Length: 616
Ligand code: ADP
Ligand code: ZN
Image (cartoon, rainbow, N blue to C red; front, side):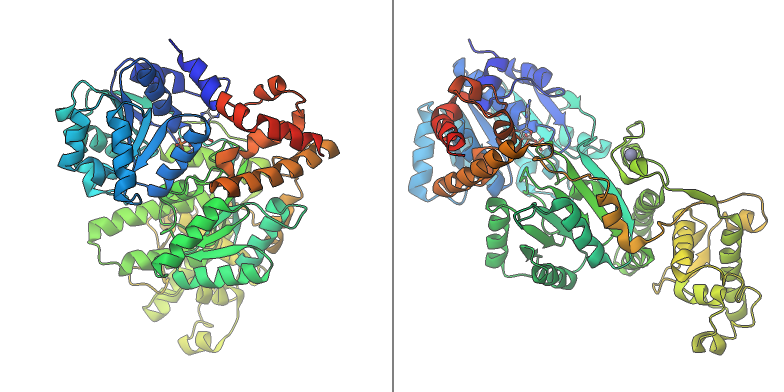
């Protein structure tokens, strides 16, 4: 009988399980139910693929995998087939004769793993078919889709509890990367998994480097960042996703990046569906495409080699930020999460909350979620500690975020905080209206603009008291006062500022305020950090020979992927290819030692790889 480890080596070409994989696989293969919570890129697929193979090989039946994402299913099946697994998919993309063929294979017990769309699975006809089949296990991927409160709700998912009623003896494994306790509870209830063993992994993504820069000229900052960290010597660049809030900004940014020589494509819900699908397919299959998108782009993007995720606008919440940045580096190789953020972002998000149709309770929740994210942006401590703490996970400073790598200087900003807060107070007192940061900074700096003279704000006592600081410095101060809750943005939009509850203590001199020093030249933010040599490149440290191998192998992979009509990473991941380039194996046995090369791939591609290496 084959063991889990033998399958891992033979089929997938890996040498060891990661994290809780071994334990989970053991439990599932032994017939237990489980609920697996693991971050994106944590290695969830193997948790059901290996048990499916184990059980099928022990004569216990085919593993049925439910997944809501058509592109993802197809990639998984392509990758499994490449690895020599008898896998198939049943979804709306098949013709009826193709579907019948798959069903015949299933009935005859010829399949090891079958991916099925939930709406297909739940048809009475298919359930009857399953009754006549040996089913080894049910895997329910993206299980948070049962949550009605989440953004990925799928009504068909609710009905999946039927599986337990109709096939009580078949073990079920539900998997998700959505960690919060509420969703977890909902999954367990709705899928009748209350008695399942729960496997909760750390949600840390150690290979992702978090960086948040002050917005100055965001586009230029972004371009500098991409050029410094994600451009290749041959003029290509890494795959990445850039998130913007509005469709208009998506279009403009994609066009602008295109004009700068990047392969950038736009993606948002307002685009023609066919074009959108085409761009998504290109992003998946071609190398080096940068997708500029609204959050409409995301679900179902499990491309493993996305090397960076950039935010040109502030997301709504920590959940959103973490989910979006989580699409970087699923393959475990170094990746960047980069965001440019400014006072305008805060005002914009607050306005969107205020202007939304939601009731007050909902608006309060939205506001506090936004505040948590602001706290992240303005923290002088480790970003990762802050993020994980939000998800109830304790951790130590990570050494792989901007604040760990370049600890920001802090300074005693008590006096400036008092100036700013009393300016808010005086101006409001003088005019009985509240004003936004731009106006307040003009008052502080003694800029007697027409608006200021009209309102008589050149007569208030705080006029000109902050003339020794620049506009940018004052903006940074205001931003931090908002993040600290000392200032609040008025409901009703326009970004007018009000004193927060604890402002009084600062004004009375009862507390001191420590502020983060602004980077000396925010416009150079991207380049500065780039000079630290933090490129997330798999070719890092390769000598000339290895680099030549790498280029040749990439060419071979591109051609092979095109021939098979699959994304390059389905043939081999970058990490595998880089390891081959480095170790330059001369024989099939040596090649077999490289992680990521299983028996089927060795047989299929071994000779070609050796030839490619010889030809360098
Ligand atoms: P998830 O579904 O949790 O986002 P995946 O199952 O797609 O993650 O796995 C992420 C990546 O990690 C994949 O490229 C996969 O091949 C790789 N991987 C998973 N488990 C292992 C392992 N034990 N050893 C090496 N690589 C692994
Ligand atoms: Zn850190």
